[in-house]
Image 1 (tube, rainbow, N blue to C red):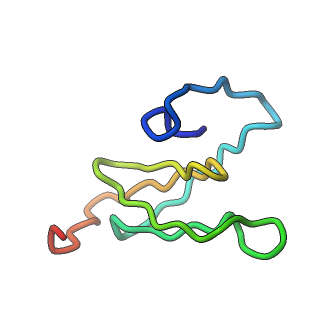
Image 2: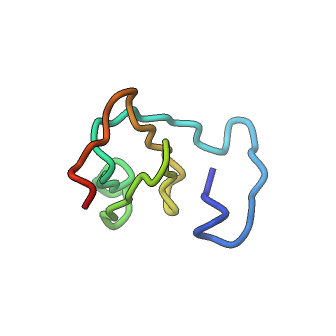
Image 3: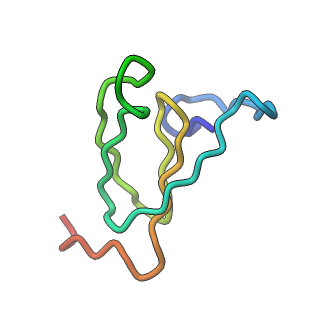
Length: 74
């Protein structure tokens, strides 16, 4: 799902259409390119402020792994 804080709207999930991909990560800063190649999107860097962040392009959701995320508070 797209992040309503970034897009200013809250879309409705449609089964079979809306991606529900959750990717567990070890760092608060993640790079997303939608899978790369012709089916991807421009690479964007996203910062996880709390526990997760959703890419505004492809709706992939990155979830911070338990105990991870101490990136020196930068």
